[in-house]
Amino acid sequence: MAVLVETTLGDIVIDLYVKERPKCSLNFLKLCKMKYYNLCQFHTIEQNYVAQTGDPTGTGRGGESIFQTLYGEQARYFEKEDLPKMKHTRLGVVSFVNNGNNMLGSQFFITLGEALDYLDDKHTIFGQVTEGIETLEKLNEQLCDEDHRPYKDVRIAHTIVLDDPFEDPKRIRYPSRSPSPTFEMLVKTNQIALDEDVDDTQGKTAEELAEEIKKREMAEQAQILEM
Image (tube, rainbow, N blue to C red; front, side, top):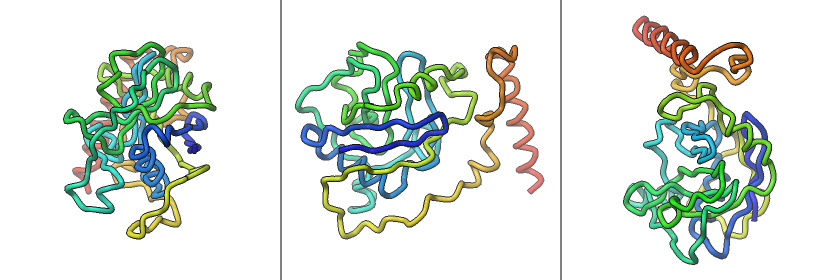
């Protein structure tokens, strides 16, 4: 059971632990089929640690499970699956993010290092990257600010479900097309476009990139005031 995740840095294939994590797998597969993850930013990247995404707001505070679509706001999150025990021992482990109350939504991360045992028992592993290690390497190389937010705008472009063993709930209506970019994506994004050449080989330091981001924020605030 697998999903192809197309990102702006390259593609990865995630194999899911359907038997070990049935509820997590169902949640991820149906969100992918809803095109929920399309255009989501990798809003947090920590070198040799994790790359986190799955929040449409891009803040790290948003997102919800597929069960909200089925059962309403009270089912925004669902309880984490703890058994069988699984370990963050390898590069490319995929886990849902614990929201602090042992509940899960849509946000997930991919490990960019090995032997990250301090993540065990807190977050819930539900998959493993089996193709696209070079894409993980590119994620790991991204320059980020002090809050681990990448200077470049790295996103999930599209998700393709390669195999889904779960029956589709009757209440779900899958969209025929990807979501359109929001106002925030088009106007308020202050990150540097992926195709802009601003890496260290061009002489740009992290401090210079931070200053460039600050200037963009000021320009965007001025633009919004004029609207």
